[in-house]
Image (cartoon, rainbow, N blue to C red; front, top):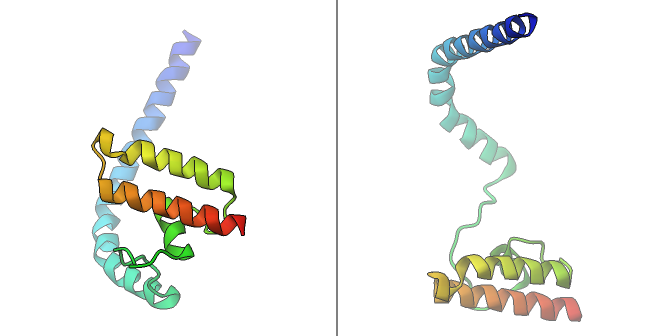
Length: 118
């Protein structure tokens, strides 16, 4: 009996918390949603827009190879191989992936391994 009353009070507390969160979200949600685009522009102005614009360069470089594999361009050979294996498993043409993307992943791995062996 003591255990069931403890469970019941926990459920009541969780319900009260959910109702409170709902009221707060209804009250302040529109304000946050409307002010977010302005905050995002201000933050980008402070730190600069460092997002990757997309597309591939005509000649692979260290920066692009790291971006393709999603690792630092100074990563170890083991890290490069592990990341390459994971990406090829996800993007292999035999499994429905893009042949072009698979070629770029292979090119990035080859480039970074060549750079790490120098």
